[in-house]
Length: 78
Image (cartoon, rainbow, N blue to C red):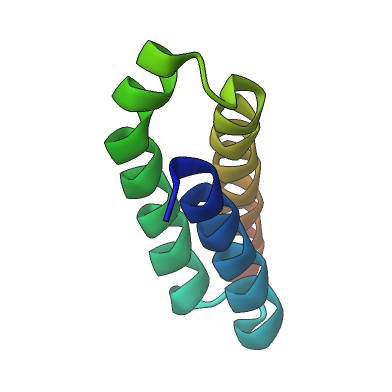
């Protein structure tokens, strides 16, 4: 599987976990898996200048979903 496919699969996993668990623990785990995948494929994608827009989008996607999850948890504890 290529790096772009892996990132798309992980991003889909985050969305699936967010919907099926209402931003529960599995969503947090899926975001962590996405970050791990980004770290794993980043050097090769940059070296090959391959799908960099997808790489940067995946990182932004992870940051936004992580912050949404944090805000939801903060709202639930207040």
